[in-house]
Image 1 (cartoon, rainbow over the protein chains, first blue to last red):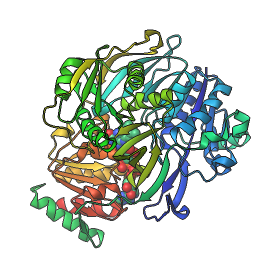
Image 2: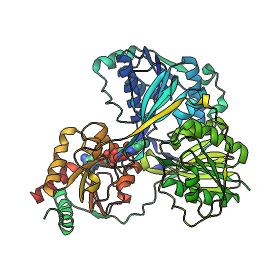
Image 3: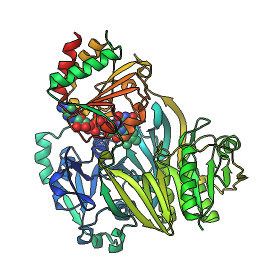
Image 4: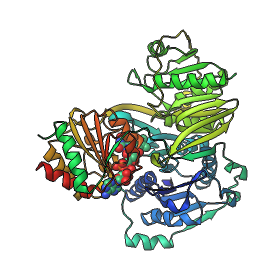
Length: 263
Length: 317
Ligand SMILES: Cc1cc2nc3c(=O)[nH]c(=O)nc-3n(C[C@H](O)[C@H](O)[C@H](O)COP(=O)(O)OP(=O)(O)OC[C@H]3O[C@@H](n4cnc5c(N)ncnc54)[C@H](O)[C@@H]3O)c2cc1C
């Protein structure tokens, strides 16, 4: 079985930041492997270790800078990586779901995997829609918010659990080929070992343009236009205790005693 | 004049709250577009559901009787057929786990843009303006799109619709292609029984990713012991296996309503807040003065938990 995992480098934001137009100013941003994708990579690698998968390939839409993040996934055990980038993607504020779907589906068609794993959502734009839209586009079956995948496959069927709200899980069988959006907690993502990090440097990282994939440049024209970004107006009337840790802890202690806690 | 088609959510024979909220959101949008609000009620005891959903502001309810529970293929096929029949401008769905299991597919099938997890919506002519959050709630954004769209709404952002309506209830004759159904739901399971029921606790000492390492949890247990309180947590602590699932507060965990909720190193992501906003008094200990938890906290300490928590514990020992 071949598994394709979508890997996104997401922007992380410092505690204090400033907004510049419709973006957070660069100096307040960091970059990291999307938390949900980390679990998706781990699940794929575990399937490979269990002898279920023969090959694990990652796919990323992103500029050269994000190769460090892709190498993280390779260091954890993915076999090779595809990175899609194009000048036409430079300076796009927000790549919407349709654009991602069109680009990723071209990669799926080339790679022809049996299973596509994506994160439930990306920690930055949090659309939570790409995996399911992609499945529909390529004619795969799908399951959203999967927090357990049986490693024994019954023929062409994946048995999963979908995590619903309120501590309820749905037990579902999904025919392959399929795309699953992976929820955190499905496994314990490993840290990349030193050996893994060294090996990752030698793994194939293929860069493709939209033209290489036969995708028209118009695919990146998002339907959705980001028109404003601002810090949410706080409606809170929070009482903030100031002072040293001892002083603030004393204030909190007093409140707790007032409330009848631990008397 | 353009219509809005809103899809309702249910599970195990009960409508979920968001089904009444989406009536309010849908009505507002339909007022903006000058059109009608249609509801889709798919699977389960649809006639019973339709009766309950027939509230003020609903113009028509389309029921599709097909199986007891949610199946994304049935939803996707039905909604695309309803779109073809009714030609609404907007399809609204809950941003629930099930909503996310069909809304993107419907959008893709119909070649429409999809905008998820919206917290505010308005329409003006062909233009939809949607408000949503990014970076885990650190910023809010407005987004515009032209023409028809699929939009998912966040739960608990719109009030539930009240009053009785006089909507026309009609069975919609959806043509379901059974061969195209590629997934089967075999059942449901409740998770996280276990040692304690955090939803019964009067005082919760709740810990999040700010605690950094499993060994540091001792600080939290010490505080809980000193206060005679119960320990709960945000999701990452449970994902890491540091506490059992029955301690998780939030959308996919437990809803808690203690007298006092002390959120330690928890940012206050929407899925966490969904589980604890009903607490009487909320105290946040967090180094980030702008963390979303501050919006719902009654009291806050903007400082390092590794300094504050031991100092607090000391007072009660
Ligand atoms: C479908 C779905 C369902 C989900 N269900 C749930 C759910 O039920 N419950 C839930 O909790 N989450 C849930 N989540 C995850 C949620 O989106 C957040 O990722 C999670 O709540 C974040 O947990 P956190 O606040 O502990 O961590 P973070 O967001 O990483 O926040 C850590 C906080 O600690 C602070 N901090 C760091 N160091 C210190 C220090 N030394 N002293 C004081 N403060 C410090 C930081 O400033 C930050 O605010 C769900 C997500 C999805 C997509």
